Image (cartoon, rainbow, N blue to C red; front, side, top):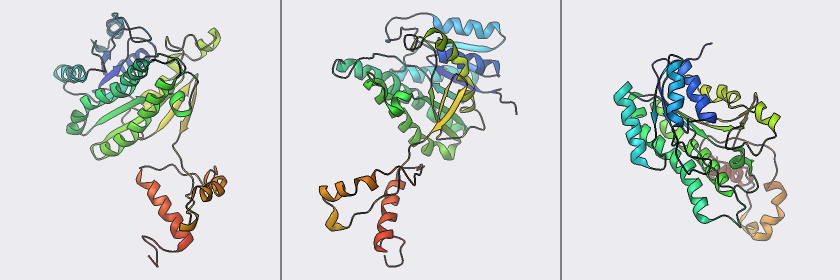
Length: 309
C-alpha cells in the first residue's frame, strides 16, 4: 500500500526545523502542496528567522510546491489569513499538523504566571486557532485531517513542566471533542506524542540518544495519522522507530447505596474504586454516566433500561 498526498494541501505549523520540517519535507515528497508556517523564534518563543523560507527552498529544489508563512498561531486573524492565502493559491486545505511549540521550563514554585500562560497559549490555544481557521473549509469540502501534538509530559507528567504538561493534555482533550464534531464531515482528528531529538529537547538527550531519536523516525506515524485512510481519535506515541498507542480509560464504577455515600464509605471502598481492572476506553464523555448507571442496575436491579426501572 502506497500512501500519497497528491492533490492535497497541507499546513504544518512550526515547520522551520525539527519535527515540523521533517513532516513538511515528506508531505511534499509524497505530492502535497505545503504551507510551511514558522515564526523562526528560539525555543522559548523569542526572536525571528527565515527558517520557513529555507524549508520552502529545500522543497522546491526537490521538485515540490510550498510557500512560507510567518503567521503566529497565537493570533487568530493571522491563522485565518494563512488558510485564505492557501485556498487562493491552491483551492483548498486538506491537512493540518499542529506542531508549533515553545518551552519555558521551571518548577511550579519558580514559574512566572506569564510563562505558564504563554506556553498554554502557543500549544493549546494556538492549535485551536489554527484548527478553527481550517474547520469551515474542512466541513464545506467534506474532508479534513488534523493532527494535534501532545507529549508524554501531558499524558504522564514530567517534573518542571507544569505549563507544558497542562497544554499537551489539553490537546488530547481537544482531539476527543473535535473528532466527534467532525465525524459526519469526514474530518478525522488524532493526537501524536512524539519523542524526538530537536532544539526543544537537545539538552535532554545524550549525544548518541539524540541521534537515535531523529525527527525522521516520527514521520511515519504523523503522516499516517493525516492520511486519507487514517483512524480518528487515536493517541499514538512515536520515537526512535518505536510506536505505541495510549488511551484514556476508566474501570467499572462502584455504586454505593445511599447510606454508604459518606467520606468514610468512599474510603472503605477506595481499593475497589481504584482497581486497575476491567478497563474500557470510552469514545465519548457520556459513557461515564452510563458506566455509573450500569453499576447501579447491577446492585439494585433498577434504573434506566432495567426491568424494574
